[in-house]
Image (tube, rainbow, N blue to C red; front, side, top):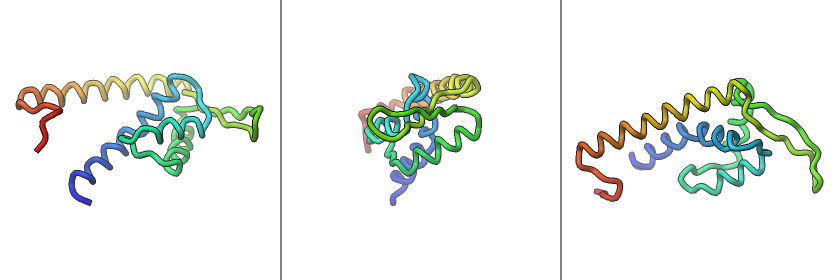
Length: 119
C-alpha cells in the first residue's frame, strides 16, 4: 500500500461515522438498508462488516436508538434513529467538518491548487 492509499483509508475511517450518522439523521433506517446505501458509495469503501460494529458502538455512546419491528416479508428488522444527543452531536460534527473543508479549500486556493490538477 503506497502513502496515498494509506491516507485514503485513514480519511475514510475518519468520515465513516459522520456518513452513518448523516444517513440515519435523514430518517430512521434498518441495518441492511443502511449497509446497502453506504456500500453504494465507492469513495467510502464500506463493507457490511464495518457498519454493524460501528452502529453498535454508536448505540453504546448514546448517539443512536434502536427499535426492533416485525417485517412483512421476513424476520424482524432493527431500525436505527438518532437520539437527542446524537442529533446534537451530528450538528456539531457537521459544523466541524464543514469548517475543515472550507479551511482546506482556502489553503488550496491560496496555493493555486485546484481539484482537477493532479501530479
